[in-house]
Length: 381
Ligand SMILES: Nc1ncnc2c1ncn2[C@@H]1O[C@H](COP(=O)(O)OP(=O)(O)OP(=O)(O)O)[C@@H](O)[C@H]1O
Ligand SMILES: [Mg+2]
Image (cartoon, rainbow, N blue to C red; front, side, top):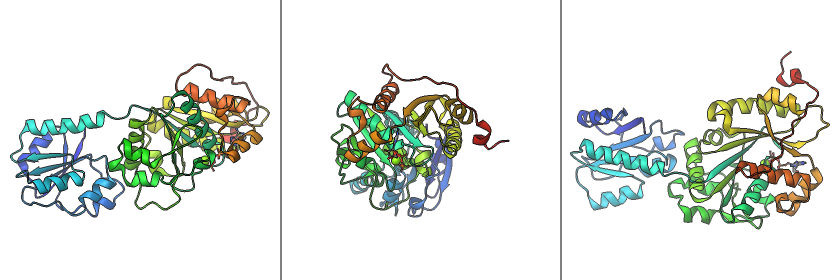
């Protein structure tokens, strides 16, 4: 249920009372012009009611506002159902029209329809991959998990490269995308199945790919927009794998739909400390049971061992991906993910990671003790 409603127009005590009686907090917006609000990163309300009883045209910037904040439903209050106004309202993304005088029943029905359209939401599982530091093997893990899942569910897996610049998932999959997440994020208001599919490229390895852009985005991306994209992806694909950029706050704030968020770390001091901070933030924001710690490029003889990492990060390591640079690099250079074969330990571990995420049997967990350098990693004496 939405909590904050913007009531746009001159104000009407009777209507305001109706809204408050429904548990909504009313924020009066006297200024009808939406142009400035369309530029803001956050809409600051959950729903907008626009009073158009005294005019027959939509306010400036309404369609831009809807494009910037696609998850905020817009209701119109009109004195008559003028056909031209209705058509323009539909085009601008208005969800519902209420005719004056509005009754409690009509208002309840409209709010109910909005809530229902939200609840009909995602059906697919979303797995988000986030590196504790650059170069730890996040894209390798995301690409291979998506590839393995695509073997299990052909045609129903999407890999989204959510780097808003310089993502390289397309290279790992030898794909040549024409469109990218930029097109999707700029058009979240029209992300139906056909449009989403038209932006993706089918890869030889199996998953569809929505690639990272090679151009600047034409707008400010906020968490609402990222979330709208992930929701749309999960409505149309059984499994959605996200390759995330750890330095983009809008991306990190839009992960509500994710079933699991995999933090990828390795055995380097700086990375382990980064993983500790990152896991702490994600645990608080999304809940500890959704955050999964994975060690990539794992070397059993390294100075920093599993127990050290677990103590610093405060979570159990759920998966170890062995270090095998030659094999990983060859897969990258040939654009053929390791999960397509089962000939190396690294390929086996990546496939098992995918299978465990979708709760199929066969995953590797064998924590062993190791030399402690806890103090150095936490930075505490
Ligand atoms: N398990 C592994 N063992 C050895 N090398 C690996 C392993 N996984 C990945 N690599 C290699 O490490 C390099 C970086 O991998 P990758 O691109 O997956 O990392 P990333 O965390 O996504 O990097 P970036 O921060 O640039 O996005 C690549 O050369 C890759 O082949
Ligand atoms: Mg990467």
